[in-house]
Length: 405
Image (cartoon, rainbow, N blue to C red):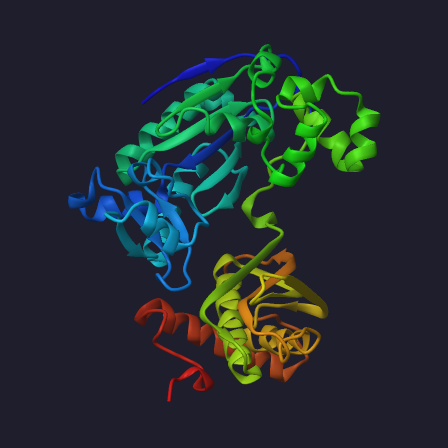
């Protein structure tokens, strides 16, 4: 385990007027690391996890593969050219979720304030945990030790007074790193960093900043706010504050997650409306199952469509009541599909998500005064289906229209 300690100045307080202590935790090369965990013969080799060679992209690459320029979201075909001797493996999401749940259970031992960012990373607010577990950096070390002991994997941690700095810090000394930004050393930490380290600032913004001769956080911090606002609008003022280490966003616990969704990139572009609707049924059911698993319901259905030319559109509709029913999500998604160019342009990707969520607990009790018999019937059916999925696996029950000829 490696430690790298740095220091800083601006302190953001919580609602009780106490300094906030945020930890960002990021599993190291998570998917490949799980594959190595399950097959030790892969240790030390360039492991690349992703989709098919025809149309897939890299989901994650081991550090050995990254040395060859392989990175996530890169087309598999390019990864094969860069690393022809790499070991290419398919995504095993159920296995990764299993290990992820182990890790998040460990996080929750130290604080209930856990905000998932993805399957392999999270923010923790440990402000209220110090009396019980010690200083924030000690909490981060304990979590790292337990993760290694109980999962066999390494995790990198960043400890800071804000989410923004904690995120940057966790990436400073990967893999198996620990970087701590103390409240009396923020400027020393941020000033030398290049702009491309600013989380959330894309390549286009970086290029525009470069034209203004802004290359480091210090350059950005010292730039007049009005110049940045004229160039970037509200985003200009926001990134100026971030360059000073000012980020007042709080950690949002996982039951306050904003949306849940699934998407699929297809081997061949979809040109048939019937095929697109079948895919929406599969995606809607996946979203609904996850909603029920998390004890959530939502009201706003969003459809994401990416065409063959990579142009992307979204369409949304808000329901009159909360739902976790796959058939209802599917029905709305189909209506939204009619508002796109699905019948005119080939489709490369479809996605369905549900937002405006309500946390209803993980129990399966039916509402006492639900006057809609159809709704009660669907809920009872979903309870039965979920029990079958739990007992016999994901593919034990499949809607008839998804059965292949």
